[in-house]
Amino acid sequence: MSRQTAGRATGRTITFKRPDGGDVQGYLASPAVAEGAPAIVVIQEWWGVNDQIKGVADRLAECGYRALVPDLYRGASTVEEEEAHHLMDGLDFGDAVAQDISGAVQYLKAESKNVGVTGYCMGGALTLLALSNIPGLAAGVVWYGFPPLDYIDASKISAPLIGHWGTQDAFFNIDTVGELETKLHTAGVDVTFHRYLAHHAFANETAIGDGRIAGTQYDAAWSQLAWDRTLTFFGKTLWNA
Image (cartoon, rainbow, N blue to C red):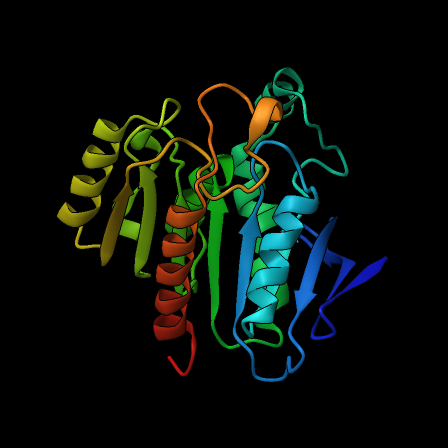
């Protein structure tokens, strides 16, 4: 299954290997010129691999990156908050990092020298865990999500990273964001956190109207600024690094 984006980037479902030899599916978006392009693992929100997160990969591919979204839920996705909770609670985060996300990194490294990682909400938490557990990542961008801070071994994070946080976020407290920032700085991590007068999921264009869950709200202006900062950061860290 594949799809074409604006005649430039192509997206398709692929199968790649976990380190333990198991198979994982994922959505791979490729730029018009894939040879020599750096790559980014894109980690889903708690909804699963839906059109919105595929769109993130497509957007990165339009900017010249190979972008792979590993299917952590094995084909399941939802638009219902209760079911999203159920799916997330059933996910083994340790296995997702050590096997699915690590396998995605290995797959991309076969053709890309530099590989980064980014994720949103649940995917933001997994991005931090990936940076502290998967060797060889070149950069990370975290979007409004973190695990319990005790789960992060900041001493093992060698890649530079940036984070995007909403000061009005009802799911990930901005005070705890400050604690995370201090923990990373204390460990010598090259980290920059950006704060926006925004709610949770401010970069998710589907978080609008009556269909959004309470406490979330898309903000086009802040989303664009965060995207601009993200692309500038990846441009500095993944190209010719």
